[in-house]
Image (cartoon, rainbow, N blue to C red; front, side, top):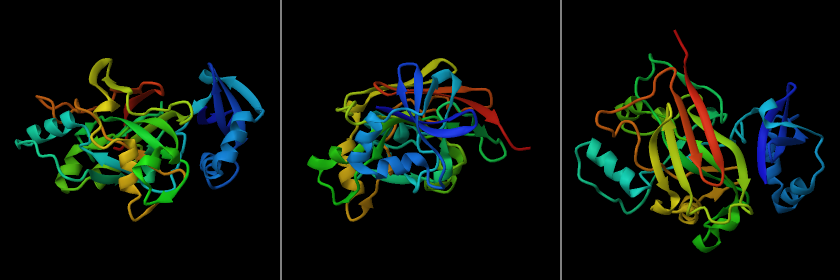
Length: 291
């Protein structure tokens, strides 16, 4: 299934994409996002979603797609420098030799970063002048667990999304940590839907690309992940419980803006498109906000 959270005629629904239309399945009428309720319901609820008769339907073009999980319950977990060539370009940009750490870097983005697949990315030049793009494969946990074995990890996945880990590089490096530079409002477009894991059996051979104003900036494959999806779930559940609806961003490949010569950053009026094979494409305009 391809599951969306969308707005149609002023109401918010969880919907199921069928061709070029959306079938409205569940109204959003509670404080907890309906998609989180559906995911937390477990396999029996997922099967019900697949079989459910729609309340109504509409063309995709007639609905507003929100982030599939509009307000994550917790911070989005992210893997840093998880593609070899991206790690190489980061160290080169810093004038350092490549070093592969024994353990993958992990940071988080706050829930307020969640943004829709076609929504504007806010840009406030008084806050940052070094806004960067990062196309990533995102994993949505379906079945929670602690100390999950790598061999069993993919059975805990509900589905997959495209994610753009928009980053304010000046803030990120000023503070010598990632959280503030990664957590500006609206800095995590995701979607355009969740493709459930039964329809995407192998997440480890998917082409992912990013364009800025139609120019290809990133072009790689998830086969190049250093810590793959199964490994990431094992690491992130080590000593801590992953829960239904948790989101994991698996890292970005080479081609980010700050590592280019000369560096490139986003500005108001730019359009960023991020695509992962077998899932879909995000298209977000950068829009000026603030004074």
